[in-house]
Image (cartoon, rainbow, N blue to C red; front, side, top):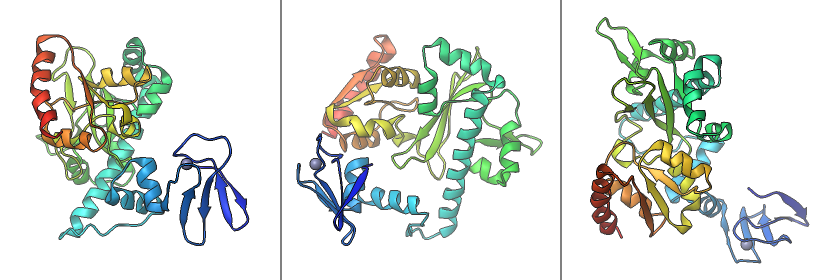
Length: 299
Ligand SMILES: [Zn+2]
């Protein structure tokens, strides 16, 4: 976050919390604390992570633990559930990697043509980790099996389902894939848009032990860092991506559902101002009319 130089017992660098040309940000290794003589920001490592990553206290603890490779006791009666959650997050990360590799390969050409045709740049594709689910029904399942995951875990993660013959099958195929990432940087779900006329047009991950659709917000992992001037609530994944690419990095979207109170509360943690950017058609106007009282309700 800050490049530091040694000065005596301390380390100094340019403060990430205000704009400056000469370093007034001091790090004190002996006490594990920091202080900026320019803007007065100071505290310990948790304060630092909370401020720079815009996290609450527990999220900052988990963020640090994750980076250090430690497990935080979740106080969950069933430690099996914690293990399952961790496995699902690993599956999701591998799955996102798999879809992205397919997208940038020859096999992903239909997805790449769609995205480039909509004006999405290769840089934006990388930034959002976009992907393509191939038309084969078994490619992801085979890939995850080779990585040591059990079909039951893939089904729990909702990236696969069991066919009538009992064989696990990829849940997403022939779709452009949008990973949903939480505030700690975990891939928690996917949205998939079909290419062509198949149905449904959008298919999202159902609720899993690590994901509830009613509180997911697409691109909130990026938008939280630029929510100071308000958040833009857009209608869909592609609207959000286009807005970010145009410099509006505070744009987010719900996951194909109407705005919920939980989502509004999450937004209220980062800003008091939300701009609604729904389409001007009838559906968009209805969604706007529904969203306004929910947003008012949480302040
Ligand atoms: Zn400062």
